[in-house]
Amino acid sequence: MNAYSSKRVIGSWCLYDWANSAFTTLVVTFVYSTYFTSAFAPDENAGTALWSRGIVISSLLIALLSPILGASADRGGTRRRFVVATTLMCVAATAALTFVRPGQPNAVLIALTLFVVANVMFEMGIVFYNSFLPDIAAPERIGRISGYAWGLGYAGGLVCMVVGLLGFVGIPALGLEPWFRLSEAEGFNVRATNLLVAVWFLVFSLPMLLFVRDQRKPTGRLDLRGAVADLVETFRKIRRYREVVKFLVARLIYNDGLVTIFAFGGIYAAGTFGMSFTDVMIFGIALNVAAGLGAFVFGFVDDRAGGRMTVLISLVALTAAAGLAVWAPSAMWLWIAGIGVGIFAGPNQSASRSLMGRFVPERHKAEFFGFFAFSGKATAFLGPLLLGRVTGLFGSQRVGVSTVLIFFVVGGILLLSVNERRGIEAASA
Image (cartoon, rainbow, N blue to C red; front, side, top):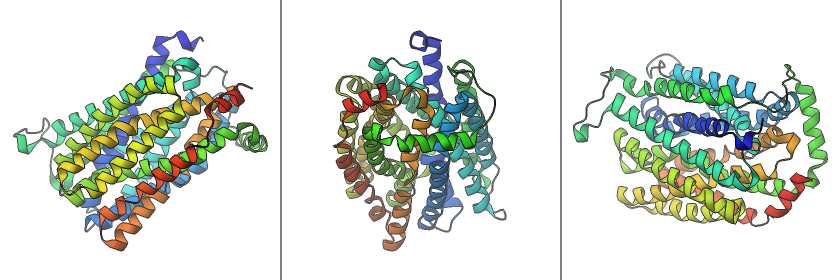
């Protein structure tokens, strides 16, 4: 398969970002997380602490599983099978969240368990999905194709958010009633957006599941022992991939800041600035538009200036925008800060992925993207945990959110030591 010249393969791969972004936008960041903190807990601060536990547990499981399963997929040529399995499990767990009522016995435990399952399966699917990028994109176009997909992903999250807002919640301030007259008892109309996400994810992921295939013939078996042996061998040869290691350590830090913003952005808007649920959804729509445009435009910057420089630019801007969000005296300033975060969050993630795509050796794509996922999740619990602890200690979400600045600054300083040219040469050798 000459994937570089196959528009169908590239288009199918990019569409998976459109499909999966509904989960991060509606479940993780803006809709279900905001609903959970207000409906399943006595107050926003307690809800924030509970939600942070779900994020922490998810992050630890993802960090543990991603390198092992990535190496196993490389060994058996089964990346596509892993994408199919993890997508279906995420879809099922997300749909089940619809039917967990706040007042039922063990509601918090059940809801958080389903969320953890869905989130882990979502992130594991991303490991194998990302590992196809070096297969489908020519080296000189890898930045813009990653940017296209990330931009398309934000567009998908935006459109799904609009459908959820107009279809299930409505906009009372504008006199817009929801298309579907669902019961509002115990927030069922809000919980039903999980069902929308599940259907959306399933339907739009089909092209990826059907048309993007492994270049190696699958062995048909899961060899975890062999996968662990491969990981041990990779660690023995880690000196060859020094730039990869330095990059992943930097990402280990700065990605914690992004994870924390995504997990608590809607919660912060509602708890500190008194935004209604509808306001939070509109806020999320605006951020998705900004992020999609940023990812698309900076894809060209990535191919010209390099992934490292693109990530550094985004980290400087994200630090400034997050600082503005902490200081913001009114919702208007939060909107300005949020748009800034959106514009540079997309390029940060897209350029990080394309930079990793340039660094991966031919025979270890899923394994190295497993390390990429590990770097995104191994300490990802620190951001939400620190935010939750600081929020509880000071009784202020504003003080808690200020902790994300630490991760952006430290991660950016570490990234300065990465030499992109040497990393590409090591992967080629």
